[in-house]
Length: 342
Image (cartoon, rainbow, N blue to C red):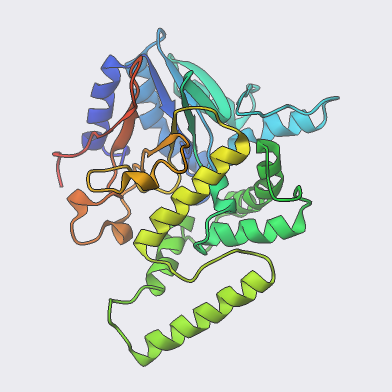
Protein backbone atom coordinates (compact mmCIF):
# COMPACT_ATOMS: atom_id res chain seq x y z
CA UNK A 1 0.00 0.00 0.00
CA UNK A 2 2.88 2.40 0.72
CA UNK A 3 3.68 2.55 -2.99
CA UNK A 4 0.55 4.72 -3.25
CA UNK A 5 0.97 8.38 -2.34
CA UNK A 6 -2.50 8.57 -0.75
CA UNK A 7 -1.63 5.66 1.57
CA UNK A 8 1.86 6.95 2.31
CA UNK A 9 0.63 10.41 3.40
CA UNK A 10 -1.06 9.33 6.69
CA UNK A 11 2.07 7.45 7.78
CA UNK A 12 4.33 10.40 7.02
CA UNK A 13 1.96 12.69 8.91
CA UNK A 14 1.95 10.39 11.95
CA UNK A 15 5.75 10.36 11.96
CA UNK A 16 5.72 14.07 12.75
CA UNK A 17 5.07 13.26 16.43
CA UNK A 18 7.34 10.19 16.68
CA UNK A 19 10.86 10.02 18.12
CA UNK A 20 11.50 6.61 16.61
CA UNK A 21 10.02 4.38 13.94
CA UNK A 22 10.38 0.61 14.21
CA UNK A 23 9.98 -1.20 10.89
CA UNK A 24 9.01 -4.59 12.26
CA UNK A 25 10.08 -7.00 9.56
CA UNK A 26 9.45 -7.64 5.86
CA UNK A 27 10.58 -4.12 5.02
CA UNK A 28 11.51 -5.47 1.58
CA UNK A 29 9.75 -8.20 -0.38
CA UNK A 30 12.69 -10.39 -1.37
CA UNK A 31 10.76 -13.54 -2.25
CA UNK A 32 9.10 -12.39 -5.44
CA UNK A 33 12.17 -11.51 -7.47
CA UNK A 34 15.74 -10.22 -7.44
CA UNK A 35 17.04 -7.87 -4.75
CA UNK A 36 17.64 -4.98 -7.15
CA UNK A 37 13.99 -4.88 -8.15
CA UNK A 38 12.83 -4.92 -4.53
CA UNK A 39 15.17 -2.06 -3.64
CA UNK A 40 13.97 -0.01 -6.61
CA UNK A 41 10.32 -0.51 -5.61
CA UNK A 42 11.01 0.35 -1.95
CA UNK A 43 13.25 3.36 -2.66
CA UNK A 44 10.53 6.08 -2.87
CA UNK A 45 8.91 4.84 0.36
CA UNK A 46 12.12 4.53 2.39
CA UNK A 47 13.43 7.86 1.11
CA UNK A 48 10.18 9.60 2.08
CA UNK A 49 10.32 8.06 5.57
CA UNK A 50 13.94 9.07 6.07
CA UNK A 51 13.33 12.61 4.88
CA UNK A 52 10.30 12.98 7.15
CA UNK A 53 12.22 11.83 10.23
CA UNK A 54 15.39 13.79 9.48
CA UNK A 55 18.82 13.42 11.10
CA UNK A 56 17.63 13.92 14.68
CA UNK A 57 15.32 10.91 14.79
CA UNK A 58 15.87 7.24 14.14
CA UNK A 59 14.59 4.16 12.39
CA UNK A 60 15.05 0.69 13.86
CA UNK A 61 14.93 -2.06 11.23
CA UNK A 62 14.01 -5.56 12.46
CA UNK A 63 14.28 -8.07 9.59
CA UNK A 64 11.61 -10.72 9.17
CA UNK A 65 11.33 -13.85 7.07
CA UNK A 66 10.69 -12.08 3.75
CA UNK A 67 13.81 -9.92 4.09
CA UNK A 68 15.94 -12.38 6.05
CA UNK A 69 18.51 -12.03 3.27
CA UNK A 70 19.48 -8.66 4.81
CA UNK A 71 21.08 -10.62 7.67
CA UNK A 72 22.97 -13.07 5.51
CA UNK A 73 26.26 -11.16 5.26
CA UNK A 74 26.34 -10.42 9.02
CA UNK A 75 25.62 -14.04 9.85
CA UNK A 76 28.30 -15.17 7.40
CA UNK A 77 30.92 -12.96 9.02
CA UNK A 78 29.94 -14.37 12.40
CA UNK A 79 30.27 -17.95 11.23
CA UNK A 80 33.92 -17.41 10.31
CA UNK A 81 34.80 -15.47 13.45
CA UNK A 82 36.56 -17.05 16.43
CA UNK A 83 33.28 -16.75 18.35
CA UNK A 84 29.92 -16.65 16.48
CA UNK A 85 27.79 -13.52 16.81
CA UNK A 86 25.41 -14.10 19.75
CA UNK A 87 21.78 -13.27 19.02
CA UNK A 88 19.97 -13.24 22.34
CA UNK A 89 16.79 -11.21 22.05
CA UNK A 90 18.08 -8.05 20.39
CA UNK A 91 21.48 -8.38 18.75
CA UNK A 92 22.91 -5.24 17.17
CA UNK A 93 23.47 -5.92 13.46
CA UNK A 94 26.19 -4.06 11.58
CA UNK A 95 26.86 -3.85 7.86
CA UNK A 96 29.47 -3.07 5.27
CA UNK A 97 28.95 -0.66 2.41
CA UNK A 98 28.81 -3.36 -0.28
CA UNK A 99 26.05 -5.37 1.49
CA UNK A 100 22.27 -5.28 0.86
CA UNK A 101 21.60 -3.90 4.33
CA UNK A 102 23.77 -0.89 3.54
CA UNK A 103 21.46 -0.06 0.62
CA UNK A 104 18.46 0.04 2.96
CA UNK A 105 20.32 2.27 5.41
CA UNK A 106 21.32 4.60 2.58
CA UNK A 107 17.73 4.90 1.37
CA UNK A 108 16.56 5.85 4.88
CA UNK A 109 19.05 8.73 5.12
CA UNK A 110 19.24 11.26 6.67
CA UNK A 111 17.45 9.43 9.52
CA UNK A 112 19.72 7.56 11.94
CA UNK A 113 19.36 3.80 11.43
CA UNK A 114 19.89 0.88 13.78
CA UNK A 115 19.27 -2.77 12.94
CA UNK A 116 18.25 -5.30 15.60
CA UNK A 117 17.48 -9.02 15.39
CA UNK A 118 15.51 -11.10 16.18
CA UNK A 119 13.73 -8.28 18.00
CA UNK A 120 14.20 -4.98 19.76
CA UNK A 121 13.33 -3.40 23.10
CA UNK A 122 11.14 -0.34 22.59
CA UNK A 123 10.90 0.27 26.33
CA UNK A 124 12.14 -1.77 29.26
CA UNK A 125 8.66 -3.32 29.37
CA UNK A 126 7.88 -3.49 25.62
CA UNK A 127 9.57 -6.01 23.35
CA UNK A 128 8.95 -6.19 19.58
CA UNK A 129 9.79 -9.01 17.15
CA UNK A 130 8.59 -9.83 13.65
CA UNK A 131 7.20 -13.17 14.84
CA UNK A 132 8.23 -15.63 12.12
CA UNK A 133 9.59 -18.07 14.69
CA UNK A 134 5.97 -19.02 15.44
CA UNK A 135 5.91 -20.92 12.14
CA UNK A 136 7.83 -23.66 13.94
CA UNK A 137 4.92 -24.25 16.36
CA UNK A 138 1.59 -23.37 14.72
CA UNK A 139 -0.74 -26.32 14.15
CA UNK A 140 -2.28 -24.94 10.95
CA UNK A 141 -0.54 -26.53 7.92
CA UNK A 142 0.47 -23.34 6.13
CA UNK A 143 3.30 -23.74 3.64
CA UNK A 144 6.02 -22.27 5.82
CA UNK A 145 4.93 -24.42 8.76
CA UNK A 146 5.37 -27.52 6.64
CA UNK A 147 8.83 -26.40 5.60
CA UNK A 148 9.75 -25.66 9.20
CA UNK A 149 8.53 -29.10 10.24
CA UNK A 150 10.65 -30.80 7.60
CA UNK A 151 13.72 -28.77 8.57
CA UNK A 152 13.10 -29.64 12.21
CA UNK A 153 13.56 -33.28 11.22
CA UNK A 154 16.67 -32.57 9.12
CA UNK A 155 18.69 -30.41 11.50
CA UNK A 156 19.74 -31.34 15.00
CA UNK A 157 17.27 -29.46 17.20
CA UNK A 158 17.68 -29.58 20.99
CA UNK A 159 15.56 -32.10 22.87
CA UNK A 160 12.13 -30.54 23.26
CA UNK A 161 12.64 -28.10 20.39
CA UNK A 162 14.17 -24.63 20.01
CA UNK A 163 15.06 -22.69 23.16
CA UNK A 164 17.13 -19.80 21.80
CA UNK A 165 17.06 -17.56 18.76
CA UNK A 166 20.09 -19.50 17.50
CA UNK A 167 18.03 -22.72 17.61
CA UNK A 168 15.24 -21.18 15.54
CA UNK A 169 17.76 -19.82 13.05
CA UNK A 170 19.39 -23.24 12.65
CA UNK A 171 16.02 -24.68 11.65
CA UNK A 172 14.53 -21.82 9.64
CA UNK A 173 17.47 -20.01 8.02
CA UNK A 174 18.30 -22.83 5.53
CA UNK A 175 14.69 -22.76 4.32
CA UNK A 176 14.80 -18.98 3.94
CA UNK A 177 18.10 -19.20 2.07
CA UNK A 178 16.60 -21.66 -0.43
CA UNK A 179 13.56 -19.43 -1.01
CA UNK A 180 15.81 -16.37 -1.41
CA UNK A 181 17.99 -18.19 -3.93
CA UNK A 182 14.94 -19.11 -6.02
CA UNK A 183 13.78 -15.47 -5.88
CA UNK A 184 17.17 -14.09 -6.91
CA UNK A 185 16.98 -16.33 -9.98
CA UNK A 186 13.59 -15.02 -11.03
CA UNK A 187 11.12 -16.46 -8.55
CA UNK A 188 8.58 -19.27 -8.86
CA UNK A 189 6.88 -18.84 -12.22
CA UNK A 190 6.06 -15.23 -11.42
CA UNK A 191 3.88 -16.17 -8.46
CA UNK A 192 4.47 -14.48 -5.12
CA UNK A 193 4.70 -16.71 -2.08
CA UNK A 194 1.95 -14.84 -0.28
CA UNK A 195 -0.61 -15.20 -3.09
CA UNK A 196 0.26 -18.89 -3.48
CA UNK A 197 -0.42 -19.47 0.20
CA UNK A 198 -3.73 -17.61 0.01
CA UNK A 199 -4.82 -19.70 -2.97
CA UNK A 200 -3.93 -22.87 -1.10
CA UNK A 201 -5.91 -21.69 1.93
CA UNK A 202 -8.97 -20.87 -0.19
CA UNK A 203 -8.82 -24.26 -1.88
CA UNK A 204 -9.35 -25.91 1.50
CA UNK A 205 -12.31 -23.78 2.49
CA UNK A 206 -15.90 -24.63 1.73
CA UNK A 207 -19.12 -22.86 2.78
CA UNK A 208 -20.70 -23.97 6.02
CA UNK A 209 -23.03 -26.85 5.39
CA UNK A 210 -21.53 -27.62 2.01
CA UNK A 211 -21.39 -31.40 1.42
CA UNK A 212 -20.52 -31.69 -2.26
CA UNK A 213 -18.85 -34.92 -3.35
CA UNK A 214 -15.75 -32.97 -4.40
CA UNK A 215 -15.64 -31.08 -1.09
CA UNK A 216 -15.96 -34.26 0.95
CA UNK A 217 -13.28 -35.98 -1.14
CA UNK A 218 -10.85 -33.07 -0.79
CA UNK A 219 -11.52 -32.95 2.95
CA UNK A 220 -10.88 -36.66 3.34
CA UNK A 221 -7.65 -36.53 1.32
CA UNK A 222 -6.46 -33.52 3.28
CA UNK A 223 -7.23 -35.20 6.59
CA UNK A 224 -5.32 -38.27 5.47
CA UNK A 225 -2.34 -36.15 4.44
CA UNK A 226 -2.29 -34.45 7.86
CA UNK A 227 -2.30 -37.87 9.54
CA UNK A 228 0.68 -38.95 7.42
CA UNK A 229 2.60 -35.76 8.24
CA UNK A 230 1.94 -36.21 11.96
CA UNK A 231 3.14 -39.83 11.83
CA UNK A 232 6.30 -38.55 10.13
CA UNK A 233 6.70 -36.12 13.05
CA UNK A 234 6.39 -33.06 10.81
CA UNK A 235 3.59 -31.82 13.10
CA UNK A 236 1.73 -31.67 15.32
CA UNK A 237 -0.71 -30.39 12.71
CA UNK A 238 -4.49 -30.14 12.58
CA UNK A 239 -6.88 -30.19 9.63
CA UNK A 240 -8.89 -27.11 10.71
CA UNK A 241 -7.85 -24.26 8.39
CA UNK A 242 -10.64 -21.82 9.26
CA UNK A 243 -9.95 -18.15 9.85
CA UNK A 244 -10.71 -18.58 13.55
CA UNK A 245 -8.20 -21.39 13.83
CA UNK A 246 -5.57 -19.39 11.90
CA UNK A 247 -5.81 -16.69 14.56
CA UNK A 248 -5.92 -18.98 17.58
CA UNK A 249 -3.13 -21.25 16.39
CA UNK A 250 -0.89 -18.29 15.59
CA UNK A 251 -1.42 -16.76 19.02
CA UNK A 252 -0.73 -20.06 20.77
CA UNK A 253 2.42 -20.53 18.69
CA UNK A 254 3.68 -17.01 19.32
CA UNK A 255 3.03 -17.34 23.05
CA UNK A 256 5.15 -20.49 22.94
CA UNK A 257 7.97 -18.60 21.19
CA UNK A 258 7.88 -15.90 23.87
CA UNK A 259 8.11 -18.50 26.61
CA UNK A 260 10.89 -20.47 24.90
CA UNK A 261 12.98 -17.34 24.28
CA UNK A 262 12.48 -16.21 27.86
CA UNK A 263 11.05 -12.79 27.01
CA UNK A 264 10.30 -11.03 30.28
CA UNK A 265 8.06 -8.12 29.33
CA UNK A 266 4.46 -7.13 30.10
CA UNK A 267 3.90 -6.23 26.42
CA UNK A 268 5.12 -7.97 23.27
CA UNK A 269 4.44 -6.62 19.77
CA UNK A 270 4.64 -8.74 16.62
CA UNK A 271 3.36 -8.90 13.04
CA UNK A 272 4.04 -11.72 10.56
CA UNK A 273 0.57 -13.31 10.51
CA UNK A 274 -1.02 -10.12 9.07
CA UNK A 275 -3.99 -10.43 11.45
CA UNK A 276 -4.09 -7.23 13.53
CA UNK A 277 -5.29 -7.36 17.09
CA UNK A 278 -6.59 -7.34 19.63
CA UNK A 279 -9.48 -5.46 18.03
CA UNK A 280 -12.91 -4.58 19.46
CA UNK A 281 -14.85 -7.80 19.79
CA UNK A 282 -11.77 -10.03 20.10
CA UNK A 283 -11.55 -12.40 23.04
CA UNK A 284 -8.77 -10.79 25.09
CA UNK A 285 -7.98 -14.07 26.83
CA UNK A 286 -6.55 -15.27 23.50
CA UNK A 287 -4.11 -12.36 23.52
CA UNK A 288 -2.90 -12.84 27.12
CA UNK A 289 -2.19 -16.50 27.81
CA UNK A 290 -1.48 -18.13 31.18
CA UNK A 291 -0.36 -14.92 32.84
CA UNK A 292 2.14 -14.15 30.07
CA UNK A 293 2.66 -10.80 28.37
CA UNK A 294 -0.10 -9.01 26.50
CA UNK A 295 0.40 -9.66 22.79
CA UNK A 296 -0.33 -7.08 20.10
CA UNK A 297 -0.18 -7.71 16.36
CA UNK A 298 0.45 -4.77 14.02
CA UNK A 299 -1.09 -6.53 11.03
CA UNK A 300 0.19 -5.70 7.57
CA UNK A 301 0.36 -2.92 5.01
CA UNK A 302 -0.42 -5.33 2.19
CA UNK A 303 -3.93 -5.39 0.71
CA UNK A 304 -4.73 -9.11 0.56
CA UNK A 305 -8.13 -9.33 -1.10
CA UNK A 306 -8.31 -13.07 -0.46
CA UNK A 307 -8.43 -12.50 3.31
CA UNK A 308 -10.55 -9.32 3.40
CA UNK A 309 -13.98 -10.97 3.22
CA UNK A 310 -17.26 -9.23 2.45
CA UNK A 311 -16.64 -6.25 4.80
CA UNK A 312 -13.10 -5.12 3.97
CA UNK A 313 -13.33 -1.90 5.98
CA UNK A 314 -13.91 -3.95 9.14
CA UNK A 315 -11.57 -6.81 8.31
CA UNK A 316 -8.78 -7.53 10.84
CA UNK A 317 -6.58 -8.13 7.77
CA UNK A 318 -7.11 -4.65 6.33
CA UNK A 319 -3.87 -2.72 5.87
CA UNK A 320 -2.74 0.36 7.77
CA UNK A 321 -2.33 -0.77 11.37
CA UNK A 322 0.57 0.23 13.60
CA UNK A 323 1.35 0.33 17.30
CA UNK A 324 1.84 3.67 19.04
CA UNK A 325 4.10 3.38 22.09
CA UNK A 326 4.25 6.32 24.49
CA UNK A 327 6.68 6.79 27.39
CA UNK A 328 4.41 4.69 29.60
CA UNK A 329 1.22 2.67 29.42
CA UNK A 330 0.07 -0.07 27.08
CA UNK A 331 0.91 0.13 23.36
CA UNK A 332 -2.08 1.32 21.34
CA UNK A 333 -3.16 -0.30 18.07
CA UNK A 334 -4.36 2.25 15.51
CA UNK A 335 -5.15 2.16 11.80
CA UNK A 336 -3.82 5.09 9.82
CA UNK A 337 -5.81 4.25 6.68
CA UNK A 338 -9.29 3.94 8.19
CA UNK A 339 -11.54 6.64 6.82
CA UNK A 340 -9.41 7.16 3.74
CA UNK A 341 -10.19 6.30 0.09
CA UNK A 342 -11.70 2.89 -0.55
